[in-house]
Image 1 (tube, rainbow, N blue to C red):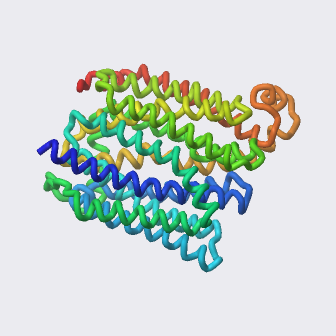
Image 2: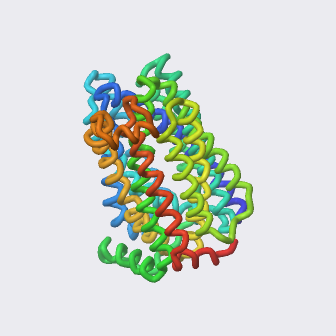
Image 3: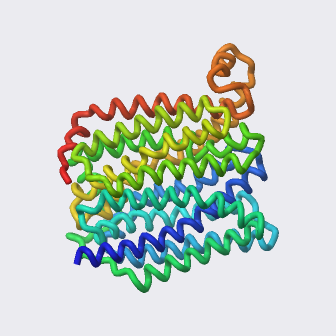
Length: 429
């Protein structure tokens, strides 16, 4: 029975990889398109901000809904709305009316669907996959995610050169159709009646928070992850693309190479996690991996001045990420009761990802209105920092990487020695 369920997960995993590839190509093309329209890091930041804000807000309220309803149906409906967003972009483009604000609105819709789809998917994985394979599955997900990161920029560039943005959107919609049909016709997700029903979404939220209040180690882990997410979104997944484009005179090939190297590091980490024996010291692995990612990745990205060093930084930053995700998931699946995983995962998502939109919008603002003007001001401190990061356009964003590297490393090492978090090391394979 377990083996059969795992085979179903493999089908789900492969089909979602195909869909993720299409979505990633669209995302990469739209970032380039938006930056070409405005030449502003802020415009790229707002795109991500519009995606995350509804996701974080709704995550608080969807937990009990997910526990009560079919995970498969929720995933199918959410995927349909996400596909409708790509279809809307294509329609605006073909009519010659696509504007950056259109993408903002569509990203809000996608964020709403993600608030339902991601916790439902997390619960579904827990019900399809035997407990002893959870860490391996996290490694597989990291592998596939980063494989997409490697190939989607190259494929997007080729398709963009041959058929433009419309062909990329069509490929995205075709990949959605593959994933939708695989889930609809080939995947059965076991369901379990919830232990109790709730008169309002607030009751489900209270249950999720009550569980986290009792499990202090998990609660502290989620809080520290929220802080880490804030630092990472100030730079990576926010101003990385504008910084590389600014410091390479708008070279999209350089950006593609750096993104590919970031994916390659994640692939390497994902493969190792997929095949290695699960660690008994899960909390230690999480925070040491975080510290290494910030220390080697962010600092090297700050001082690097060409594609070689940016690529090396990308590998150093991304290789530890699968170790973080795999060990966190292993802790959560072992500690959260089966029947209330939807509620707890939803509350976890709301807390852990609540800092992401703040980091995204603040990162874009600080890049355009503080760090870049500051580094071009000619002040004494700016001159000192130029010795480290250089004096080209984009040096202000490089200073931001310098700051997040120091802050992220410090938070990771301090959290590593928290007494409640260290108790999580006792969870064996």
